[in-house]
Image (cartoon, rainbow, N blue to C red; front, side, top):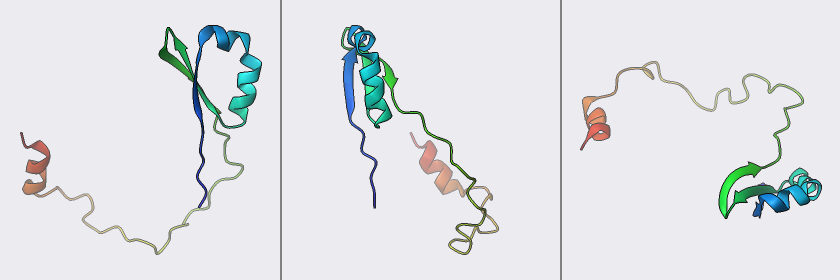
Length: 86
């Protein structure tokens, strides 16, 4: 299993202006940067998700699960009560 780990670094606005090209290189490498004004985060600079090169084929999970016929039936009152309990 592969995990996509990204490091998050906080930088101030003046530093972001002075070193934008360097920070963009880091973002292209997968890092996420938080830009702060007076130590309060105001923006996030992160990589843009690239679109898939091709569409995923339909039916990838065919046969792995089954949707019951009553999947959209009203919930039992006991379940509704547990959500609305005060």
